[in-house]
Structure formats: structure tokens, C-alpha cells
Image (cartoon, rainbow, N blue to C red; front, side, top):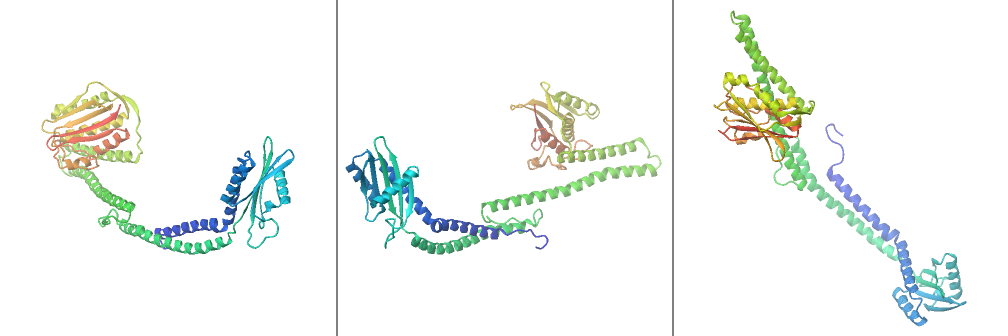
Length: 473
């Protein structure tokens, strides 16, 4: 087997082999039943037939001799059996029979011996013998089967003896065997042809899918046209198409991520390097303003690295959620209070509306980061009013909801599904000089999902945006 190729049989070969094997097993069972064990089944059926006749006769023993004789004659004609009944009473017996000439039951001595054997065997006996009379087989005679049963009644004892001739099955077996040879050959050939057609129908689209799947995730990938093969292959074709589109999207996001990270890392590094060289080379530039710029850029670089690490840990599951009960309303109120300088210096208004305080079970540090990211996002994009509104409400299904609302330019409808993706940025002008890392909403998404909560955004162009989260109480 050459390198790079998967081992094993093709689906076409497997399907042909399985179908042929299944057909062969069915034919083997038919051979066993109709040829090998035909004589055994025939004898078993005959044994059941004469035992059933014996039970019928037993139910008629209480009738008078004439009635019993008529009933026995009917049973004998229906089953082609020889029937003899001896009823013993007070040391004597009377016989009622329907017998053919030369039958073994015509021989009184043989009957006595059979009755004695039945008594010795617990009351009933079944055996087969050559010919019809149990002595020398005559021309045209077949083997016979005999059943004897002793019945004990209150006022008499009865012996029921029934014999039937067995039809030879050798000729039937030969005929069936000849027919089965033809049937087997035709069945196997037909099974192979049907399996080949079916395998070709299944394997052809799978082969095409395999070839096209080698280009999955690249612009060269193309879905098969129409409805290839059966329903499953058509669904697989659709799935591969969607997977290719998603992989292409992931690849585009990866390139965009690398470009964004490279840009976001290069910009503060360039600023730090440039201002550092300027302070070193130009007299008088070593002042507090330039040093503050270097510090601000270093802080931005630090935030970017921390956000990348935090998001990476959340996505990989390395950073666990530490659950504890805490007053989420008080924690959010305290966080809003930290923006007091921004209120006083830059004129921003951040209002927090709530009716009562709630205690929930969650990771206080992680949820504080969620509120921090949502508030900063609202501040970055708020309108001329420079107002951000935070609302705390309880939903009808018993969840605690937080809405962070700005009155900025809003979000285009086609961008709403992607607003939570990392580094997704709309072409909206920032109202605030400082910008984030582009990872804040992605971090919010991961933390809320880890808490079993919900998140979303409601927005229309020109009407601001309402970013909301819902947490279990």
C-alpha cells in the first residue's frame, strides 16, 4: 500500500461481498431445511399428526362401540392412518378398528407386543419399522410409523394404536436439490449485479465528494451540483459546503486577527520607541507629557496582551469560573462610581437604574470585567449626549437582566451577528479618544456562556445600541 492512502476495501467491494455473503447464507439455510433435514422434518410432522389423532381418539373413548367405530373411520380416512382401539374391562377386551390389509395392527401377536412395550415405557411409545406389516418389505411398501398409548379410566383401560405409512422423500430431495442449484446460481448472480449497481450509485458521489473535499476550506472547493446520490450523500455534500465556508471564514478571521494583533502591537511599540528616541536625542523633550504618552501606550499594550491571554484561557477552558454568592447590584454600583472622574472632567453621564439589590451566584471578578467591558464599549460609541444608561431588571422567566444603553450611531443589521466576534469593528466613529483592544465583547460572550447566561444586542442605525446580558438568579 502506497504512503498517504487509507487502507481497507472500497465501499463498492464491501457492498458486493456483504450482499453475496448474505445471499449465500440464506441459500445455505434453505439447503439445510429442504434437502439435508427434509426427512427429519417430515418424520417429525408425521409424528405430531398421529399424536394429534390419538388425542382426538382418546376424547371419544367414552362413546359406545358403534359411534366410536364411525368416528375412527372418519379420522382414519382424513389422516390416511390405521387405527386400533382395545378396551379392557373385567379381564376381557373389545376391539374397534379401521385397518388396511397387511398393516402391522392386523397381527394380534404384534399388537400384544406393542401394548406391552408401551406399558413398559410409561404408557406410550413411538417407533418406525420397515414395510407395512413390520416383517418383510413388499414391493410398493414404504416405511411405517406407529404410535401406541395406554389410557387408564375409572371403569376400563384402553390401548390406542395408530400407524401410518411414510412417503419416501428421496425423490423429492433430488428434485429440490436440482432446483436449488439453479436458484442458487441465479440468486448469487442477481445479488452481485444488484450490489454492483447499488454500490456504483453510492460510491460514485462519495468518490466525487472525496476529491472535492481535498480542497475544503480553500477558494478552489466547489460543492457538487444537484442532488448527488442518496439523501445521506446529499446531506454530506451540504455539510461539506457549510464546513468549507466556515473554514474559509475562520481562515479569513485568522488572517484578520494576525493583521489586527500585529497592528495593535506595532502601534504602541512604535509610539514608545519614537518618543523614547526623541527624548534621548532632542534636548528639552524629556518632559512629563512625553513620559505620560509612553506610559499610556505601555498601558494599552498591557491591556491588549491581558485581553488576549484572558480570551485564550476562556476559550481553552484553562481559566475556570469561581462561583460564589455576592451582591451583584452593589458590585455594579461600585464600578459605576469609579467613572466619577470621567463625569467631572470629560462630561460623561453614567446612570444606573435599579429597583432592588440582588444576590446571585457567580464569579464576581469575571462579571465585573463583563460590566467594565460593556460600559467602556458604550462610552466609546455614545452620541453627543455623552450619556450611558445601565438598567437592572428581572425577566419573566426569573433571570436578572442588565442593559447597557448608548445613544450613538447604532449598528447596521447585517453586522449584528458578528458584533461579538473578536476584532470585529464597525465603521463607526469613536466619540472618545481612547480605543479598546477589539476583544472586549468576545470576552463578555465567553464569560456569560460559562455562567449559563444569555447575551445580545438590540440596535438600529441612528438609534444607539442596547447591549444586554441575562444571568440566573
